Image 1: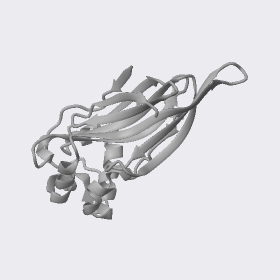
Image 2: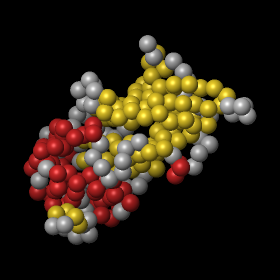
Image 3: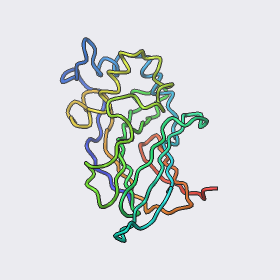
Image 4: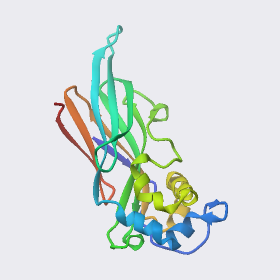
Length: 216
C-alpha cells in the first residue's frame, strides 16, 4: 500500500521573483544560470536504488504487542560502500518509509529527459504519529548518496541547492518560479517479514517502487 501527498504539480521555467535568498545567491540563480548544476542533474541516472531494509527481529513484548526492529541501509552509487545504516524499532509489522521526491523537467536537463532525486525523511510504524517518526537523513543537508554528483558546484552553491530542495516543498508558489516540476512527499508502507530484503528503487519520473528478495 502506498499513499502520496501531492504538495506541488506541473510547473515550467518562469519569471524572476519570490526567490529564497542565501547571501547573494538564490536557488533561481543556480537553476537558471549554473551550467554545472544542469550537468549534475543530467548526470543523475534514470533509475537508481535509494535504500534497503530488512527485519532484524520481530517478536511480542511482555504485553503481547508485536514489535519490529528493522535495519535501513543506503549504499553509495557504485553499490560498494555503506553510507548510512540505522536501526529502528516500531510497534506492529507495518512500517512507513517517508521521503521527499524532487522532479526536474527536461528544460533543466541537458539531454531533455527529466530526472528525480529522493530525500529520506523518516521511518514510522502504523500506530505512530508520522511527526514522531525516526529521522533518516539530516534535513537541510546534502545526502551522501548525491555528493559525488553535485560536488563540482562548490560548497556555497551546494548549500543553496540543498536548502532549497528541502524547503521549497512548503512553498508551492516559490517552487513554480524556480523551474522545478514537482516536490512532493511520498510514504511507502510495507508489512515487513523476517527473511526478506526490501529494495527501494527510484525512476526518473519520481516513482518509488519496492522489490523483495530472500535475505541470503
